[in-house]
Image (cartoon, rainbow, N blue to C red; front, side, top):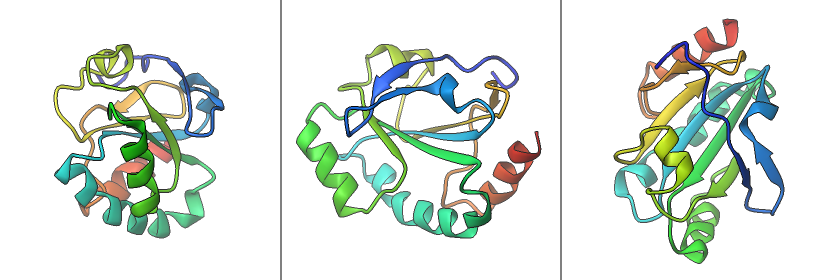
Length: 143
């Protein structure tokens, strides 16, 4: 729920680096749960690139964190490369894992915005393809 602390987690990113959500406190996190086999997820990747271009002045203050539920790590990595997805990438190998469970991920894509204070700013924010996402991210940055 918005205003509640975001469930913290620790996970290894695509390069094997340890990523802890709470390490991003002070920044806005746009969290995207997705998978390489999910058509709607893949359709959001081009708009996400455009979003990052529009928000370029704020890119030091926004972390784009992609958590894949792919069970095939090779396909996950191929999709990142093919679609040129920039950001922080991690894979949890299935939806029935602790991190998607903590965020009540029932379907994908599922998006969250975590505020600078580490609390959930929006638990159902607009997708990158939505014209409203810029305003929501800017409001989160004010916060």
